[in-house]
Length: 293
Image (tube, rainbow, N blue to C red; front, side, top):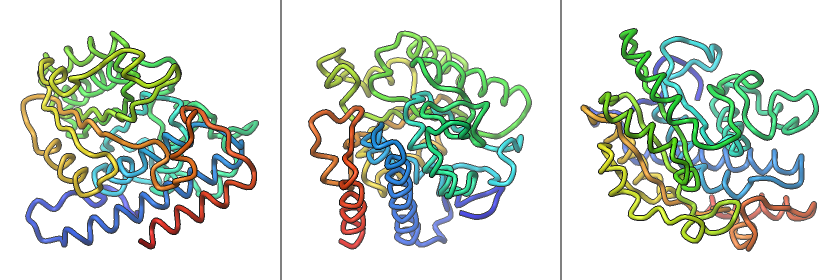
């Protein structure tokens, strides 16, 4: 995406061709996955499975929903995208490169000394990164404060916060959810990456979060659950969240670790994975083959 104050915002009048819109987002998701693979090869390991799984979500956000200016990451009128899960930085950088906020060539420095792209996202280092990540459970609270501030300023910008299903284990997340709902912050959209896996094992075995949609609704949120690797379904959900008024919205996205690259999707230990040197090109080939189908 090139310009500026109004990237491809949803066409509520129906004048844009829906299939063209979806195809454009799918192409962006493909490039985000390719960018993430390029980053991962620099270190030979990392949270590459999550990056591949959440790429469709990030493509919808950055190529279709978010208002920003690539040349001015601090533009006051921008929508804010918060990466609550700092270890997903590899995915965020891939999306920032696709959006033109950082140069694609800079991805080659991922996780290296003196790089602006540390392995855990830090707002002080990377253009387009709103908050520093690390310990989980902080993002939604920051999003609530940001949204309150924007409303008091009369700023129509929206705040998006990407969480993980493992992050729902944190009590601070639910405190923030209650506060956000209490203040009727309909300028907030939370996004939950439900990939069913966290550091200690399958999410359901660590701390059961289901029925997760009902829980968000009980906290006063407009809750939608979709296949997070189905671009058309994501577009519909994000359009609905944007149009909703009176309460914050959450889009719960069921994603698949390593989506688009069967070699990596089949890994048993997929939360943080080691990829052998010869496997990176196989992964790229599989990604390209999937695009052709």
